Length: 525
Image (cartoon, rainbow, N blue to C red; front, side):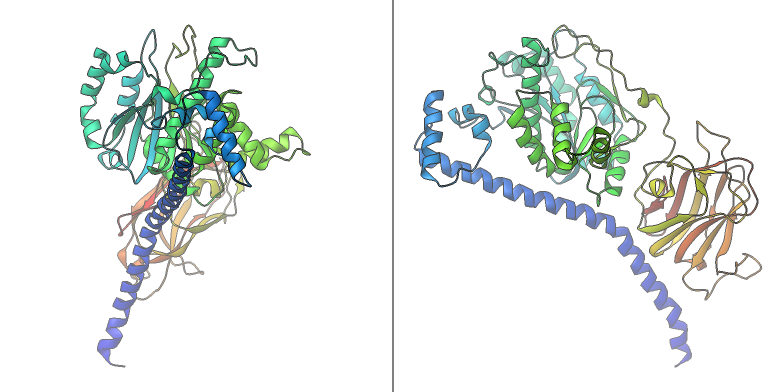
């Protein structure tokens, strides 16, 4: 082999590792694309169902406006087929009376699709005070320019009376948010009057008054219309209300949390503990939810119906209630602290005062989170109360260990080699500032030892790790010598016994590929 060939080998290896790094960087993008393709598949199935419904209507010749005639047509249709396929018209037969009953009467905006996140906000006219504009300003102003291109906010106006569309308040609303409407970030829709059934003779249940039963029943129908409109627009759907405020960085926090859990069998991610605020769903699941609501929209409020869906999915009638709650918790994942706070004092139900606040909203975020590259994580430390390293890596929590001792370690073994430019580890948090990590080194395991810095500059361990930094005042940060890259693993090694417990609340690696690898706040770019 020639000298030139020998010199070219390290360069070739660097090229290969650089390519591997790019593949890692695009892995998350590929997953997002996969999710969108799944949404597209469900959209195709939905369109197929709609076409079948249209075909059925053609076979009927014409749909009469009289409800008795409608029932007669349904019976005739059932007699023509050996099997009757259920659809929403069996639960809401009045929809057959008007061809436009499932088309928005008002639709303002560009109809943006293909985004990561769709946020739905139902609203109705309140007699005392409207909070809608303040809610939208809170949501929009906390989005970065890039995030504004990756989401759409849909305002559903549950009013069908013409005065709403012609009022001065409506004019000023559209004027105030003209930029967001023209850019595609914001859409406003309203259902036709024909969408709603007769709500005057509803059965009073659970001790609710006639007016409250009507209010909650209409609310269920409003949610359903909004979800049907949103289902094909993005990967995730977030249900919000028209009287909330959001925390800074709420969009990135929700998106990254959802992506970390994307391979798990979750159904609801909760970013607020109140009612139906801050509930995230995977878009394809909206079809099931809407069908379930239509079956029981007159029976119970929306949050109760959602709980019933979870019960049907995972609860065993032969087990006790505690077992059921544990099973449901696998489908309904709670994020803390809350990202949204309820601020409305006057409810949309006339005369109702609601002093609801989310106590978790005021709590500080004790950890930061980003999408992490695939890695195997492990530690020799004794974990306290479930604050595990695995949860930290997924962005669900901070890592908390009981008094580390000499020889303890935290290890992140990447599934594929990564190139790191600089690192940052931060210990302690606002609630426990004294639980800091000290007398601990930062070590990396390079893929190859060829071309590394002089041995007297970085200490080499017996298992080929190189010490590149250490904790000082609870923080370890620094640059990584490029000659070490790419690396197979990163490790924190405790040198001396600690007198205090340890919290790891932030881990940040800056990589050459412009994406971020982190434990709690990092990303691999």
